Length: 289
Length: 289
Image (tube, rainbow over all chains, first blue to last red; front, side):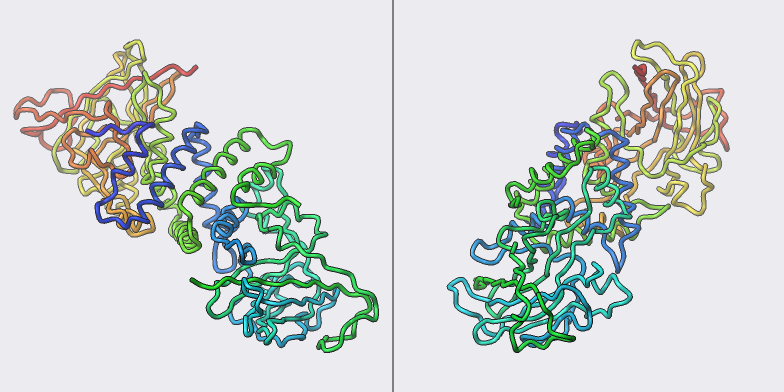
């Protein structure tokens, strides 16, 4: 009889695989089992702690549904989501950053120079830039899927006051790879704190804040898409984003512009602002190979 | 600004802890994050695989409820439950083995020599033994919480035909530490295969069988309780228990006894069997210190 011990259990686990198992599945599950077993051995994990861990997963399962996914949030605050992003980031391209749970499909098209904020009030932010390839050549017809929080800190899917496409837009670059739109400055916000993940953050002395950001998915024919976020360099949570989304090349200055300097050619809803903010952010996409 | 990279994210995670965090919580979470991050880096975990993993947990959450816990089953088939048991096993005591999901509280008392099988038919099994301390001294008044499958392979909580206390009993040892009861031989059975864990077992070429066993929780005043299982040495699944529960000292011979040899003093329901099986199993408990 094969005797299972605390020292050989990982090998026994590996020995259980059938001969026809998909090699990648075997690789991933074996590596997962090894780390799970090492974790238990190194911490001398107690039965109580094991039980708490399982109750945690059960609780996460109970509050996960179409509107909320506590497992994704767990992955986010453990740094796993960002790590997977970084593992597959391409050095020459714009860094990727977490997709998050607030993206919606079929965002409404927005013309270059149009206004994403509609009737919402707040600090007007003018966002301009280009989409380039890795040879600094502009990409015409690149798509930017853009979304952000409303001034109340909520995404449309969290907020009964907003329609689902509020602060969501799809922009297409012109022949110079140029894009531009007006909006209001996004705000910092907290991840949901009323579930098991919130309990862990609290017990670990961690805050639930994310620095404010604009979300983008930049894509173009023949190029690898980039899911990313752009952060202002004066956000107080930049050094401790609770989901580890900040990368150096994604931090930009939102520069205050003088009253009277607002450029022509923008379709602002409402009156032209006095002072306003401006950020210029260029995307770099690599060819799909 | 602190730049998070795929190489420093574990350190960044550790740096997020508050100063007043419980040291054990910090130790366990840091170790968990390190292994989770190493797992992702070593496998070059893709976004698709990450998504599948999260969908797996979501599915497990959906089918977990009062009657079934897919997270416990996941822990069982990954070897984690058994590993935690083995980490906390005491060398001089009887080995522990998985509790499983079929234990019920308040099992009905059963007198020494009484019959646990009630009206059920099957191979009669006579179970006898002693509860000793680690100096081989008998422990009087030790409690044995006993449970097993009915002949149809189902535990009472899985089976509408059985009342909840069917094949569950609580026996108290006499002044010699002795216990004895009759039952039917437990049968091999499969763990639930219709959920995400079943899908993984299938993809990994693993069967869902557990070797047959009797469950025990042995306890006595001043001693550490042992949650364990006793297996027959002729079970075909002994070498590949899908939940890794088999230990060398828990495998016993169920010895066939000649017709006419059934001893007096047992309160069998129904007629005295011709041939029958007998297993003798002693428990060893260590003092609580």
